[in-house]
Image (cartoon, rainbow, N blue to C red):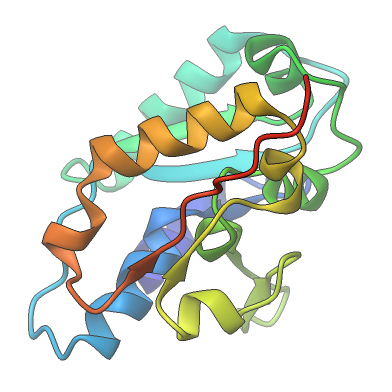
Length: 177
């Protein structure tokens, strides 16, 4: 994990974080007593740079990371452009974007500070990830369309098959769009 954090830091991106499943999966693997890490479909690196929202820049950053650690499935996304992709209001920062991830237990990010100390951001708190609870973030609970995206993600990720101690919450109340 530290190699991944150092590689991400080497890009010198504004407001960067390694986030989502990279953090959550390690916590849940540890809480489940797994001796090997659950494989990751990707390692999400996010940053916030409103001055250049070209997707080509993200692909170039992924290429640079692939040169450093070729076995890692890198995914780099500038959160200053992701509101266009997700058809939602613009984010104001990387942490704002993390707060609007689909699940509270995945709304986490790690980075290294100037002294290479690990820094955690958890805009939705850490109770759910430590309690092995999966539920939608407040942003995803606001409307039926986002809750449908949350439900689809939960079904696709087979969370209970990977981590059998996790409790999955489904919202039975759907607010109007």
